[in-house]
Image 1 (tube, rainbow, N blue to C red):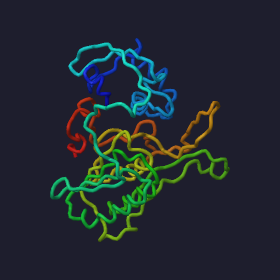
Image 2: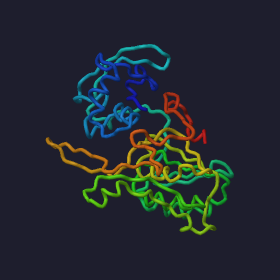
Image 3: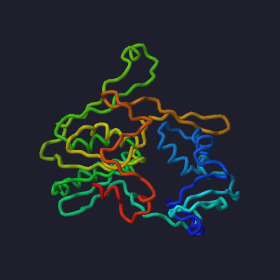
Image 4: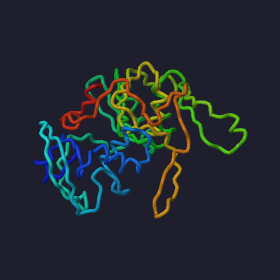
Length: 308
C-alpha cells in the first residue's frame, strides 16, 4: 500500500476507492481489467487488478500517462470525498508514502524470534542456495523447540527444491499433488490421470531431521512450487498454516504469441490434492486466517508473524 507523498493528505493510506470516473470500482475491474489477467483465482484478480501491471498496461487506474482520473473515495475516518489526480508518466519518480513493509529481498534468511523459536524465510524455490543455506542452518535450528517457516513471498520455482527441504521436517512419507494434462497419446489417455507424487522421508537420516512444532506463513503471493510444498504438508499434525489463501495456480505455463505483439500463458496441466480436492482457482486455505485489510497494511508490526 503506497501513495505519492504529494497526495498523502488528500488520499491517506487506508482509503477505499469507490468509483473511477463515475463508474463503480467493481464494474471497472470486471469489465475493463479482469479479462486481461491470466488467473482464475478471484482474490488474485482483485489484487492484481487494483495493483495494476505497467508492463501489460492493465489496472484499475491505468490509462495514458499525463491524463487525469476522477476518484470517489472513503477515507479511514469514513468521510466520502471526490478528487482528481494525474497519472504519472513514471511511477519510479514518485516520492512514495508507504505502509509498514516486510523485507524479503534475500532468497533465504534465518533469525531467532526468542530463545526457543526460530524463523526461516524461504522466499523462492528457484535458487539452489535456498536448500544449501537451509541445510547449513540445521545445526543452529536444532536448538529450537518450535519453528516458523515463511512462504509468504515465495512465488515458486522448482518443486524439487521444496521437496529437498520438506524431507528434513517429516518422519514419514508424504503424498503430493495429482496431475492431469492433455497428452495426445492413447496409452496416456487410458490412464486419464497420473498417480500422486510421493515424498520419501527415509532419504534423510533420522539424526538430521528437524521435526518440531512448525508454523508455515502463507499469503496470496505463495504460488506454484510453494503451493506444492503445502500440498505435501497438508494434514501433517505438527504443521499449521497461518495467513491467507494462496495464489491458486499449478504453474507449468504454456506461452503463446498473440496478434499485435501480445502474449498469453495457459496452465498446461491441472493439479489437485491427492484426494481430488481443488486448489486452482481458490488457493490453498490457511488453518488460521489473517485478513489483509487496511489495518493489516497500516500496522507497524507484522500481524501474520505475531499470530504465529
